[in-house]
Image (cartoon, rainbow, N blue to C red; front, side, top):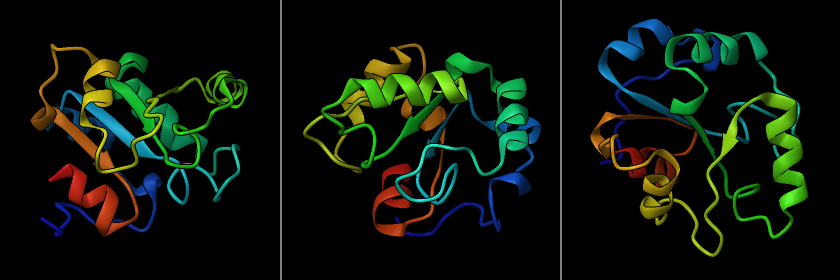
Length: 130
């Protein structure tokens, strides 16, 4: 359960076109993958554009304990506006205990096994993905 299927230096090394052949949707952890910890500016905007081009905006979610558990929806809306990515809200539940929130985000047409999880921590991101 704690073995990642793929390990890369950062999200810019991922071939999103190839990933889209095996998965229908993508979840990104925010801190240390898309942004620096507790900041909202994308580190690799071109990688996010590549992912959007391969999956479409509706098939991408951002799952973050630093943002999705936020009581302030203003910060969530600002992040979504700035990045073009939707945040998976999971108030009161932290990763990996928020599978129902993921289902709500993507709807019933996407099975959990069809979602790629991109993250940096074994005990939260990789465990949840497996």
